[in-house]
Length: 473
Image (cartoon, rainbow, N blue to C red; front, top):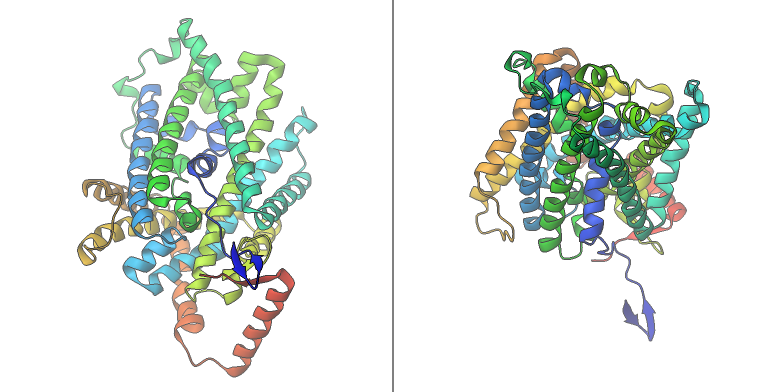
């Protein structure tokens, strides 16, 4: 609070409200989505054996920890919010950063949010419609309500958002404990038949292992979200590395033990045949209690939506501050201290994609771009080590960690090109539209007067409507 003319005034800025616990809830809450409960069979199918699939889960956890440690160094040396966008901007300049922003804004983020929200809509309705199927219209309407609720909460209060995220993270960890403890009990009782010959060499699909790792790395994706809100982290030099390391250990242990629990009850063949592995597991072991599993899955999806939106809205906030988006998106609500314009920027396009678009095709187009730009951000870490050696680095990783992780990212990009060249090519073409967009909207300073007047009118109108003002430094 500041004193002016005898009155106490609140400074209009984003507050540092993200503690270690809230940081852990953001990372764990966004990594653990619906995937571990619904379909971990992609890894089993491509690894070929139970034992090898568990090795892949652990290895992907370690590789993801490598990436998280790289981002811990980036987050403590570049103390700006924005994640990938900010690090690419610092290392490689505005044009490359804008291409990342452009791909995120027009496709990756709205499609990703819509997919998570659809899983939320489906699983929250499933207990109501059992044993019948859930109508698609009901799923989409419930999904739209879920997206609206997440947008509203993030717009109203950072504290509400953080507290909700802690609750939802605890609920999804509880769901995993409900699976892990009975599964380990079965294991200690001697239910080990599905682990016999677990590492049988003849069953291992060596050609499929890269695809198994690809699926595994997607299951762990989300460790980078705390870096999107660095400016709101309390004591980032300590909080960012600590929250990242604790979160990755928690997720790796939970993922591995959950898969071990599945195999105590289901054979590899049964797991591959299941459409929702956690539901099948619960039906076999818990009877009528299995009805609560879809509720836990829906809460898990809602937590992922909440964490994702909280994080990437800050990327749009920072991009606006850098001049890559209209000025209104870097403004703060005068009372609630939230970047409300940056929070709701994706709402129209997400709802449009939900009802009109082919979400899964769009995700296929854009999936490889995520790893391309993450790999570039980590290469940027290596590049900055040589171009800016005097930059303060409170947390520093050995150089082999970013080298191994960036190689992993580019290998997955190559794998996308090899396994699905058409969709990957379309996604690459979509991202390249960011080049003319950059020169038209950003680089050219001599814009028509009518366009400048229109932009100023829209900015002022939105500022009045949303009650936002520029953040105070």
